[in-house]
Image (cartoon, rainbow, N blue to C red; front, side, top):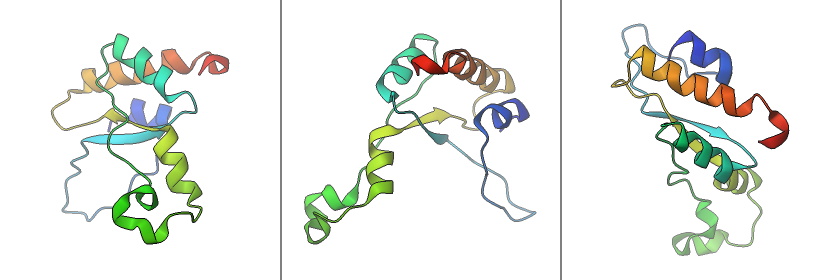
Length: 111
């Protein structure tokens, strides 16, 4: 990920072996106004989605865990969405994503 993206998003990326190559397709971020942020990013040409993350305890396959509180999973399901950072994006593409995020979050009162 470009230095500009890391500076805006403030990510702690996982450690990797010296001979490894990062292949991130997207990075999850959170906003309490997720739907509005996604809509605004899409109008700026950023391919973003709330994705597939679900609180597994709410799925029928995990009925034995239903009713238990899982605040982290519940919060991510409600607020999480993905920003593209895949290896097919150029530095210019990544910087466009960063600029769109920066522009939307400049007025933090509305996001």
